[in-house]
Length: 324
Image (cartoon, rainbow, N blue to C red; front, side, top):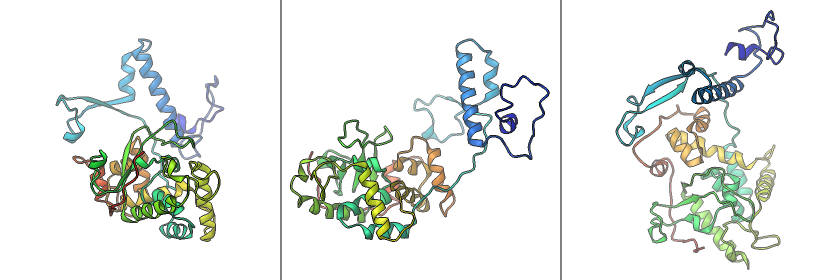
């Protein structure tokens, strides 16, 4: 690791054994993130070589620490009750965590107030108060939205108002969810009310009800066509300029405060990962880094939707989304 940190490109592959390299105390040639990427590649090649019989097996314990699962909570152990083994990399650089680029709560409120339509306000709230990505917002179907206190008549067992984020490959506007895993995101009262307002606005546009997508063109032709992804950027930028925010906000900056606010409310890292659609809980650690509270522990024993609902003020509505 010392060699990776201080040997620059000139030393890599050099046959000059007499080259003198600067060591700790000098500016490193590679950062911790780059070093970890190199080590990951090396570990993968060594494991493959050992599995293929092209390298000695004693190399694997030099790279990994082996441990059993007896120190893990019961919910994290194998379901069959048998002891299993896990590996942890022995060598890893410490990557400094930098806070995510997030919009201030006051800026989000100003952008929401600067929106000129119920549709635009709902889009902002879904990113800021539900943590949806731009593509997930544009790809929402009406059948994904459940605003009733009890959605069992719709065939859904999830309680309270929520949306289902589903990855689809056939959205006509090219929108798609980044994560392949489906997830359920609870909605608070403000977002539910924004859905109600947008529904009345959409019903007033002829042709808008023919699309199963939630967000369609209401103010420019072709009316009722699925809303494009770049239109989401345009509306956020335009609302930011009207609110006097410079530089203008980007859609992803509206999503980041949601993760931080869940951490502030006491949500565990696994809850943040579940709500934001992160494959790895490590991606959610940065939200605890910029939170005003210590990083909450991972929680076990109940569903992520139930734990998320305890961190958010949910709401319900009597309005039911039309069937697709």
